[in-house]
Image (cartoon, rainbow, N blue to C red; front, side, top):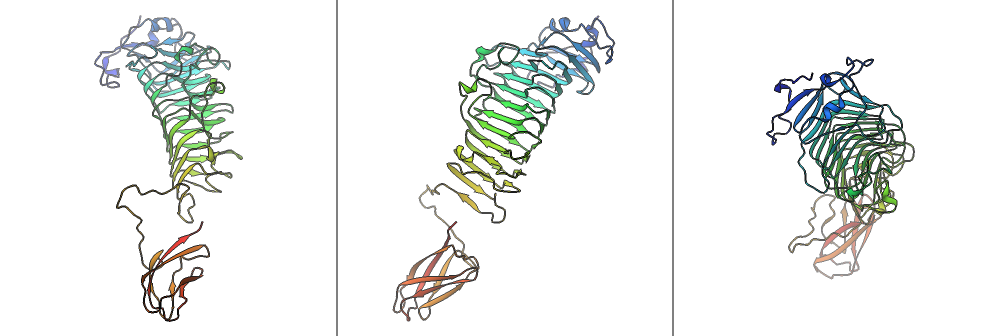
Amino acid sequence: MRRFLPLAFSLLTLFPLCATAYAVIDVSTLATSGTGTSASPWAGWESSLNAEPANTQMYFPAGYYTQSTRIDLKQGWVIRGDGKDASYVKSSMSGTAFRAPFSLLTSNQTHTAIRDLCIWNTNSSNNGSGYLDVGGGLVELVNVKIQGFRFGASFIQSEIVTVARCDFEFQTEAGIWIVNNGDYNTTYADLDYSTAGSDITNFISVQGCQFNDANGVTQILDDGGYTHEFTNNNYNGGTMAIRMAGVVNGRVTTSEFEAQSGDIVLLTYFAKHSGSSTGIGPNGTITFDEGLFAPTSTNACIRTDSVETLVLIANYFSSSQPAIKNGSSANTIVNIRSRNSNTALLDSDPTRLIDLGSDLTTGNLRMNTNLQLAKAGSGLQIKEGTNARMGQATLSGGAKTVSNTSVTANTRIFLSRVTAGTSPGELSYSISANTNFTISSTQAGDNGTVNWLLIESP
């Protein structure tokens, strides 16, 4: 006989816009056998759970549950346990454990959530997902551990998804798969969603998660969409941490990357599976900020095979090779104070580059595009003073030496007269590097006033 828990245990605050009252089901009371220990897990609860109506909360008290049948979530379902290290749902199935199946090509507000649970598979040939959301909206996966599936969590045409404080442990292909191009099908997975086509998955947030994987795994496999943000995550092991294709705008921030066996991040035109024949498209604007990248061997931190604009802000790259590989394939790279501790930031320059501070010894702003002042009345302003790059000098006896420690052998000096003075002549200059420069006139009596401008040849 099933037991209904007090409403105080419910998560009515999880979706404050949803006023529906939740019935709360104790899943352990649905079991037909077992005592909830690792040796005698609760079993036979799946069919009763799948028969529950929409807007129900399923509570897995601490203990062990064995699963042999997929659970299909309905609208408004909230599945929760007592913690990802307390409530264990263990299976040896070959397919997906939990699925939220809703209509494709529709904007759904499904309000589904899984919280405080461990979803664990022991079948090394598993071909499914620990959690699969299809067409869901307002979806939460919070404080969940998913281990041992082909894909940890997969999202097909999902919108407004929050994945927070989750552990993705030792999947065989990907920790998280954001699906595009109809690639979740029986060629690559356990279920056929080939009709999903190229419609994309939007507003995805992955935050505060841990990824631990063996070689061969891509920890986040992102095949496109709008507004994907991966924040405060730790990526450990695997072959690649993040693979992006066709992401219109994405942000990866305050995360640590370590022990990947290949390039840490790949920005590409192609989906991993069907992409060799049909491209997803270039990535749009992808931002990495305040990340710590520690690649292995000669691998890159970020490989920019296809991206319109790559923005780097205050990242630290610890690489023996240039941190950004295939830089020339990017359209635009903007860097603000990101640097590689051992060598150059880029292996080659993109079409357009704005680089502020990758060389911390100079702090130079480096550009390979034109600087255009597009508003009439705007202009270039240069401060004058000691060791400045612009100033005035008045000749005496046809010459003037200007003390300036900023001049080098590569300085080009541009001279123009303010006043002609007496006996004006032709002007020339000579440089004593790091000390001064001398302006000279062909007329010994020249006492005119001269403007000077110093510009450095890189």
